[in-house]
Image 1: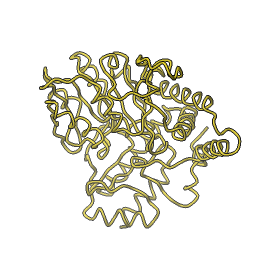
Image 2: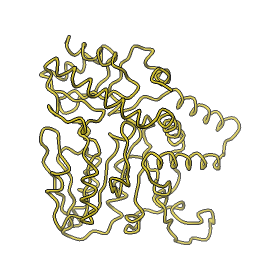
Image 3: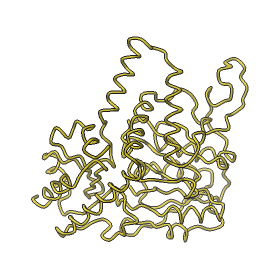
Length: 375
């Protein structure tokens, strides 16, 4: 399978649209559309209640995620969005007054408010200050002390696109018995991630961006060691062992991450994610990442050639992701001008954010840069 094959999966490309906005919402690809239509047709015509078939797909989807992250499927649970993933963590831990959480001042709010909500329990939240869109692993490590219980950080920063060195941070957290929590929504689908190698304890990720899934669908990863320290704040009939012994009412919570799946989950979202993950796996996650990084290097160089001020201005390639952001004296005007010409980007914090995916190509990038140059 090559890029030309993959590009046939995206109908919008036939409409002369250049979509550089995967950091906001990923387009729905044709294989996903076909599968969802098939499922809805079955549900309306022949297999109205095919729960066992759905459970098989859900289990397979966890296996696909587990292979991607280098973990076991029992460490994955489905939820509805990134924020609620972090709420599972924040509300499931035992906190004492004076415990400290380290965040930073350029985190997306999904990775902030679930932890700020703990201040009423006496938990201290410290924000590490960024420099030109960067908060490094070393910056966070330097802020930690013996009161630090948890560090939560984005794998990829949503605006600058800075990819933090999780191996360094994870090794530090492991050595200090600090919980490492990751917002992976701007990384997964574009980049690889090994939760074992990086010593990640918890991860929350919506799938509607780079993973090309649907809104209202997300998942968490939780290590066995961390789960053993937690008590689920919310439980439901599917949180317990032997859930189908409907009238036994035995409060025996599952030892797997599925304990946090309290009841009915987003079936259509799981069917869609299953197909997207199979597409990524078929193409190769490493090939996906290589393509994304190549695009970022090419795009940054093209913009620099036009004297466009990048954010951050200088960035080593090892910190690249799929996001390239730049400043402009009339960013809103430029954003609207590009949109009128079917070039879809994001306007964030008075800057233009570009986020092409692996199936985009250099011709797409050339057209976008030419349009920016001609504004």
